[in-house]
Image 1: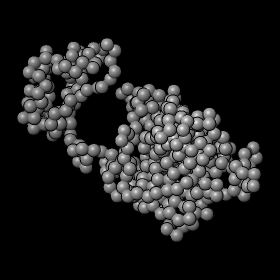
Image 2 (image 1 turned 90 degrees about the vertical axis):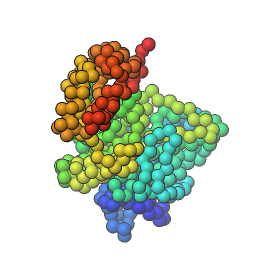
Image 3 (image 1 turned 120 degrees about the horizontal axis):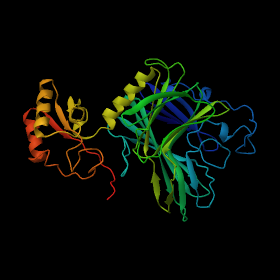
Image 4 (image 1 turned 180 degrees about the horizontal axis):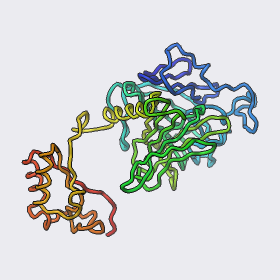
Length: 416
């Protein structure tokens, strides 16, 4: 799955290839992401060519005026060294500047996944993880880029870990999970936006010059803007065309963007939203970003959907339901809203069982004085007027009818 030789990194799944390399100055140059390449393919013909200096750009080194970070396809970028595109990291470094120049120091390859203590991580299955260590030598700040390859599901996950080995603290104002630069393919961005009872509406817009952003600042993934987005070729259809997908294993504020430059390169990035974000990192501390998920299919929207569905089922779903079909269920909401009693619920369950239901879910209205949506949210004491024999009695009677029993609740902060 992961093949490394002479500073070139080849990450291959069953049907895709993701390649990058270390440049002579130690930056990570993105080479290719798309359909699986033959094993004997050379990286050189796939590179974005640098044959002449570009106008209005800043050369990284006075001895090579064609080497400019603003026109390279990169895997990660910083601030203050000539790359003026949307940055994945805004860090007030220990030297009190925002200049950051992370360059390759080393790498390691591990079998399996590397889980995080406090954030969800994909796990299980036949996987390999590449860890590339970068360093900003002027500040002794380290960056570990994690790439985990799930070959059988055609998914690669990415995340970043920032480590401060300087005696002085640093302040993180932005730290995304991943970025990559690709040549433009006339991309359109597909997002899934909406509101209450109108969630996940599909919207398609062209990626034009500048930033196209998909973000939420509501404190959660939100029904307004799902963190997942697609970049698709103009001819992409349900079963044909190139489709790239990006998502987060994270439920907080999120930020995803595609930036088209005048050099016809597209920078893709996704991670925690930098809105009102600030994190001090002292000596010896580290900051871990959420895990980003990406996949590619040349078989249109359906092909990419299959990759993500299989990945979620095999590597994200936990517990008893892993690998199992979900039961046919009936939910009490549309039949009863807040107006129900024990007899009404049992009658509903009885009819549902005759129609082939396997699970009965009691929705809103079972707690406190919850007779409308302005009362008792957060007071999860069973309403004995509606259920005089309690919740256990209702669940047992549902079970006797041959149905599993489920309960709705909505955890929220409630004003006292």
